[in-house]
Image (cartoon, rainbow, N blue to C red):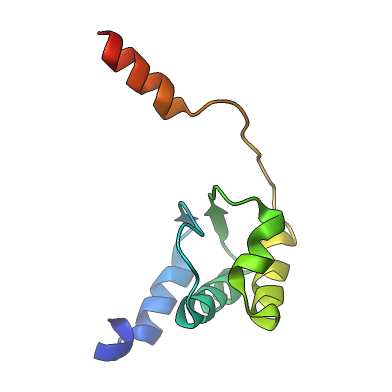
Length: 105
């Protein structure tokens, strides 16, 4: 929508200024070409200036394949993973535990 109404550059500038950007549930649906380029713009603007947190069910080792376009994938992942601190959570879903407690009550 921002492209259509001419506010795309302003939107990118606002996103670039956010101290901590959280991208939650990343890679749940196929990445379209426009999505890849938008993500690259956002990551490029934030690189080495602001923090970005990405949560995903997809292991980071499959992100390159997910992104599809090797050149864009290389550019995005080089910036995202360069100084990244990865946290891999293991164990059962916390939501399942909550659902079981709720059902028992």
